[in-house]
Image (cartoon, rainbow over all chains, first blue to last red):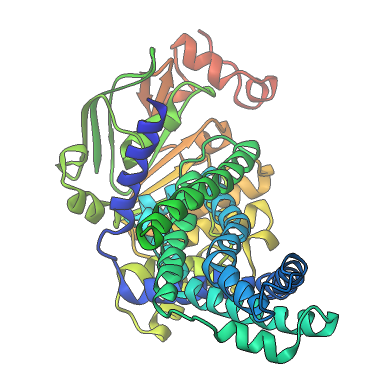
Length: 247
Length: 252
């Protein structure tokens, strides 16, 4: 019963979020601000995690493939597939759910309890549209670029760490990352990213927007935002994987 | 002018507002007073549409607000300025951006015209030169004045103030009261103030509704309130020894 209540309220909120913007120029300015706030500020953590994870995947693959029956280019191939199909689109989005989701929920939650949202409503502004739409739009626009960068850095990190540690040779790794490449898999990856970007921002905003009480409740909203965004990312990840990859 | 007619509001099984009717006049400072928890802020929130009344009418110059369409309600809201108890300034924006916000949303003024209007409003509330400060850098009194500047930026017809003096020292409270009174007189707007501050009542109470247990218990003005024979109002007005000494206890 409670679940249906939240699902209903979430879709009612979305209806208001996607209502016609009251002033396009203000919304555009907010979207650009949010691209910087949500996207550009996440670059350092994405870069660090991607490089290290790329290296770890390469070394683990080399360790696991330590057999004369497995060609050495399999290390590069495995690293590319792991990063392109799962690590960058899903794991990085889970990390962004923690960073961006908690930020959105606590920001909007704090605005709710300090009556800033009431102030917007009384001015005649669609507060849901003004506060949430730019965040959703910004994430849907910028997340694919972040994930593309994550893929590049992850594969580069694998190359750097793999060659430096002696886990594979430069030639084998580069041959491996080019082997059996199927471009349509990128559609799968970026479809997931766009869906996850929408989930992270809209679910987090939902919890923040419906905060009531004080600082304790803002903290709870922030936690709920991360927990439910993560669960939904995994659920929709499974659904999309089944749709795209299940032959 | 705003009229409320027979409004009721229940939260759960507790009736917070009981059949309240009152008229708030244009060009006057209309006060809703009463003890904490008596329902006065709820009445204010019902009037601006933050809560929905269970029954009754809220008439903005004859238009029944709860019965209007969403678009029509938005048009009425554009004429409302509100000063919240905590200011409710947008944390991420400077003082100038906060005051300019309603102008950005609802006008097609040029940048220079907006800035001119912002400076005019800041001058009205004596905050000239503080344009680039953020809310976190302002004192409590300055926040209230900044919020008042934002409330009047778009030339409102109705100004709502929720406990404008709470948390302020007596001197700053008088400054805020006088600002609200001056703005009401100068722009000839309908001002509604929720307060339990007796100094405000004595200073600016043109038209007063005393709310007790969710009901309109007494109506009058600042001169009548001091001569009241109403027991509950008498207890409210003369609750402190200070008020008894300053105003003199009238015979019951």
